[in-house]
Length: 306
Image 1 (cartoon, rainbow, N blue to C red):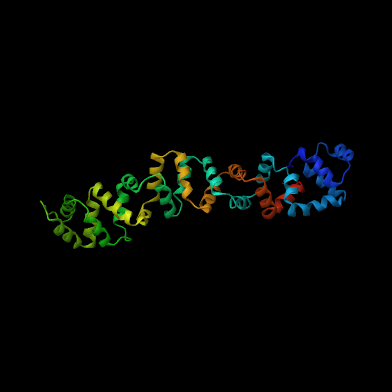
Image 2: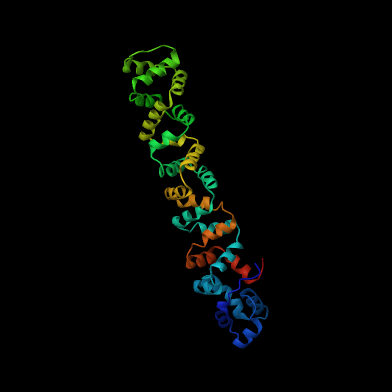
């Protein structure tokens, strides 16, 4: 950065440096704040040196000196910062502003980042847009199999929900494993037979079911304990959101995320766009954060480095 030019603050700076208006405008009329302070410090102006103190202790001074009311100046300052420094600004931002920043992502990239969330929070995003019944109907059959055959489920839990299946599905499950044809089978007897299947036969029988009874079982299980939805492959969820929802819907669903999740997502934007998100901060908070967290950036600007 060659220097942040803040013409509207030249009178303010002239007064702070104790320079006569005549000298100031004769010598510095075409200079930036950076150049003015640097030259005055080199000439031994103690007031120029004292500005360093003001910069770390006086919010109003910093706001005026760097003309932070000017969004262009704030953007230039942010361009001088590295990723860690930008993170310090993101971390103090409200969820609503961070969520607004998601608009800068293409839908595919946003959903890819959603897919990297902890399963608990990815499921929250999905359920903010779909009912559980819709989710179970939309996920691929292999994901139903993943849930039903997970070691996280106990056989007795599945058997509990099998009691709600129409007898025809119980018969089909038995036939697929034993090859035995069943007509007008007694539901209780069929359930007892399935309960006595070996672990491998039980697993195979579940996978042999048609999609509808699988959906019925998974819906029952997940209604009772929605943590089972976390067993589904994240890509199955992001594919559903990509296919059936607009980007705006996916952004609105981010309201269920924590502030730190949104920070982790927004930081993946290109630097210029991260800066654009940070510009949503009010000027007061921007100045305070710059003073407390990145004084080295202010010094860099004053010294005309970079």
